[in-house]
Length: 143
Image (cartoon, rainbow, N blue to C red; front, side):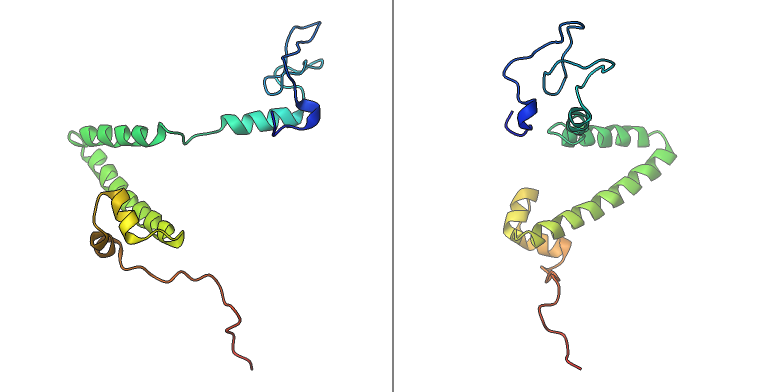
């Protein structure tokens, strides 16, 4: 694997002659008293790789949660309050995302195409494009 240190690059999996086990990350034989990884570096890298929470299935999962929340809110007033709060948070998050896209240089037309609305609707819904403050560039007053 190109991203691994030279000592950890392995062509094939070499298993320990005694235990018959190999590191889950790099394939090296496991030292004594090691269960899954040959070193702390392999353990940290693999555990970081396993912590991926937002993948391609994340957005459809959120949509399913909102659908279920709506069904539950039809029977429960407390759930209706939670759904209203979720809608408020979603609107705030969408406005922040639009501001972030604008700061990255996307035009209102590109943002509108992603949202399925016109560029004029983007301006009306999220406000006009604002200047993004990037810091002072030598404009301080001499005193």
